[in-house]
Length: 234
Image (cartoon, rainbow, N blue to C red; front, side, top):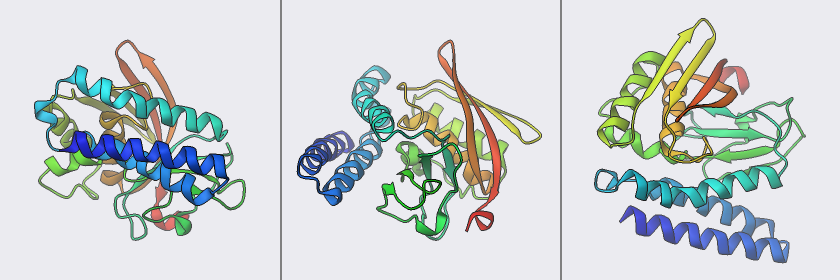
């Protein structure tokens, strides 16, 4: 069911995005992008246990390519920030800012927001819910404030149970290193990687900056930095 619904949402989103771009209707563009991102979330939900990893890679790859192209076309230069759930954004999210010098405009974010506008420092793309949000449906407890190690372990166990591999997370002071085997080449459109990132933000209760992403054989190595709690950014 998730695969059918996700495919429909992605197809509809591409159509709306193209139509809006041709006609200059920003609302249609936003709706199209939102539909595509939602399709990425819905596609791998319940039923994962019956889908081979190869099949999932084939299904997720178009969405990964789309997000990579979107980030390039929008000229988003900033490093991604993972946002834990809060009142305006109960599912949390990932914000990719337009500028290297940025401010995460938490007061402007909300469910249904895709393109965030304002000053150059506030402008960017919001991915919410993240593609890996469905993994949390397989975790029986609220991970809020449980700590990075505990939350990351819980998400890793859920990924393993779903046949999506696992993750290793190491903390050293303010520095956090994550190793996770991706399903596709864009970490923020990847269900496994985005689930781990969201888990870390939820467990810490803080915004998390993705300082660096690099390939280490079959894995992504992500270097993260704490940015403080939601209250600091409101």
